[in-house]
Amino acid sequence: MTGTLLAGATTDVIVTLSTPFGTAAYAATATIIGGTGLLGKLVVQGIVGQTSTTVTVRVQNTGLAGLASTGATISVVAVRLT
Image (tube, rainbow, N blue to C red):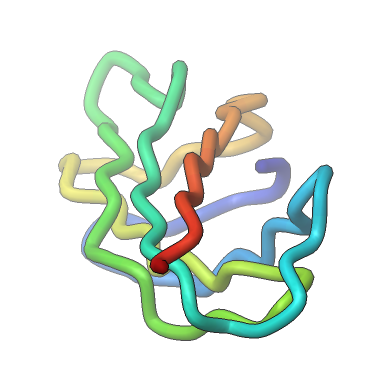
């Protein structure tokens, strides 16, 4: 994730799956690696959408200041439902 996220703000990040599923019938979870600063912290609010090829993750800066170009990585694990 790159760019600036102001304190208290949220943004939706679209993550492309490395191996697409045939349908959107799968369970996904997301975590953030990095994304903290002296007065800022990114947290995953949740999964807000998914297709057979992407997962949309809502991220919020819960810190006291904006985070600029943190280089945070959003990791998504998806498991097909049978």
